[in-house]
Length: 270
Image (cartoon, rainbow, N blue to C red):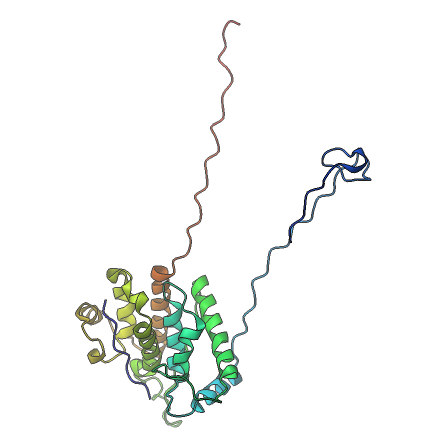
């Protein structure tokens, strides 16, 4: 399947040598012959590391840091960044951090100027990356970062009339950038990809979908989202559908049947 053109966006222990003191096999030296050997305590299962989602203050801080990336670099905005991270995480093979972080600071992947310190910025980005990755692994809902369009506070109906595609456009554009830079996802079975990709790319300009006639035809069959909530839900549903294709969960081993029980021996003369 052709990649859509990304839209431009504003130690081991040794065995003992012998049995000292005539100890029996399995008996520790000095242990009474009738005593039971102590059983080693089973190690507690490792706890799943807790991922701390970014707070609203940290999101605002990240947004400010992106705005301060020096020219001529063109960093992703915070919504485009979120879609980009999802596109990176859905690749069949994990993309190394040094490969994907360069496009956070510049949509063309140009290196940052000498002296620019991006460590704090990328630290926040990587926390969001970990949060999204956990949601994808667990097939759980996540809240995409999408812009709320500004509207007149006196117009209470303006927010309800917001164009859903305009609200989610930047997020989808970031996803499209990831599939353009890292195209392995689009090399999966095209028939399986069609529905979830159409759900995402329906929010782009058809002119950005070059050589993707099958995708455009699929988009024509879809009902546009009625409101912003439905459009955002579509982003999450499409993401998890793509995860089932490119990052399938391991199947649980089928339980084995116990061996058949033998009945009593046949009666007869002995």
